[in-house]
Image (tube, rainbow, N blue to C red; front, side, top):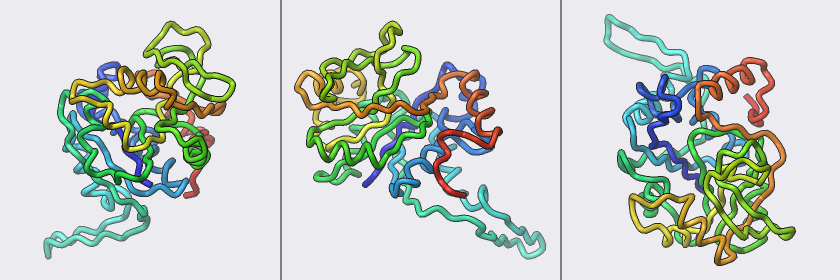
Length: 259
């Protein structure tokens, strides 16, 4: 199974750092939050990623092009103009970086990577700016069991994101983007999707959280996986500081992988 990660936005609410790098490349504990997200998926056996790039995409490309330099010891022999990388760590990852446009919306970015998705296989989809101790394997199993087109992870932090009305049988009956906080379940940003959902996206200007998700809810094709554990976005510098403090404490809740 593949995971698609949105990494093309400008991150204007964290412009202190996103002026010089894409938001998914902002560090937590010395590593980009994008790396943390890939590690989360990899801990559940998902090692093939499609990264939807846009704003300052070259920063992400250069990071992965020089991944071993970032992660390993290296010897430079200046006299012979040679370099030896001492590979201390290697990830079992295949990462496809796709330019999805500077100004494309979230749905438009997903539409642009359609050709990299198997037509008959579900895939994971998430944003490049949030971490969680979500059991991704359970979300996939839940998605396969209900047989509908889409699964969204529902969480309950303060209301700043898309609210979800969920029935007792986990059917999503309404999707509303960024309501006033009222204790409702919200869009936690971790999806499992059937490729057919991309047919609901009509172009670069399509916002995934609006017409596509609303249409899926109205047609009874969107189910919610309720997650009561840790979930935290990185929208602002305050969020970044909080996540760094958790990482530095040695007890970051989203670190479910082994070193």
